[in-house]
Structure formats: C-alpha cells, structure tokens
Image (spheres, rainbow, N blue to C red):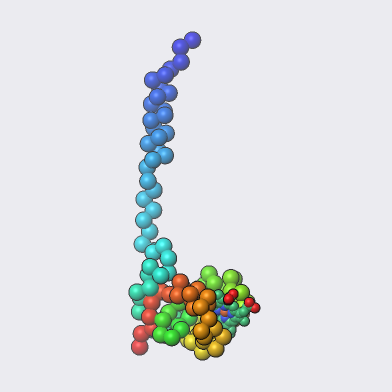
Amino acid sequence: MKRPLPLLGLALVAAAATACSSPSDQSATPASPTAAATGSYAMSEVAQHASDSSCWTAIDGSVYDVTSWIGQHPGGEDRIRGLCGKDGTSAFTGQHSGDTTPQQRLSGFKIGTLSG
Ligand code: HEM
C-alpha cells in the first residue's frame, strides 16, 4: 500500500513552523532589578512594601527589593524581614559595612533611589 507522503510532508512543515514561532512574551517588566534601577521612590512608598510577599528597603539613599532574598540570607530570614518597609541603613552597615559579598548581593536588588 502506498503511504500518503504529501500529507505527511505537510504535517512536518506545519510542526516545524509551530516549533520555530517565537513566543511574543515581551513583558513590560524588566528581567532583573538592576535593569530597572532607575526609579525614584519616597519613603512612604517603601513603607508599603513591608511584608514577605513584597519587601523593599532603603539603604544609603538607594531602594532595594529584597523579597527574594528573605529566604536566602545566610544570616537568617528575620534579619531581612526587619528591613522590610524601612530604612535599613544602620542595620545593614552595622553588620556588613566593608564586607564585599553582602554589598555585591545588595546591589543586585536595587530598583532605584530614595526621593524626598
Ligand atoms: C539586604 C540586606 C543584606 C544583604 C544583601 C546581606 C547579605 C549577606 C551575605 C551575602 C552574607 C554571607 C556573607 C559571606 O558568606 O561572606 C550574609 C551573612 C550574614 N548576615 Fe547579612 N545581609 C543583609 C542584611 C543583614 C542584616 C540587616 C543583618 C543583621 C542585622 C545581617 C546579618 C548577617 C549575619 C549575622 C551573617 C553571617 C551568617 C553566617 O555566615 O554565620 N545581614 N549577609
């Protein structure tokens, strides 16, 4: 019996086209916090992010979204929770002043600067 080769060919072309179509997933949200570190936020806005589901802190005039860091901090979750919605300058520098690794980590969470 003869196989319906033309039909099979069509199916393959259709499958290839589907596989190659690029997803139009160009979301408005930047891929990383550093890419968006251009915002300007008042302390009152930082204060609205004082929970585990959204934790912002201001340190040395910059604003950081450290939500994802809560569960990763080697010094414990509660130390980061204590910064949420607040100016964490004294807590951070009191513990980590001059430490390269925490400073580098912190810079990756920057979303902008403190205004006002
Ligand atoms: C967003 C702010 C913070 C960041 C990015 C951060 C980052 C880090 C990093 C990267 C380490 C590991 C250091 C290393 O292995 O060399 C660390 C350890 C530690 N952090 Fe933080 N930290 C922050 C806030 C704080 C605060 C506010 C406190 C205390 C009030 C604190 C207390 C500690 C302690 C006690 C350790 C040592 C844990 C250990 O290895 O025994 N951290 N932190």
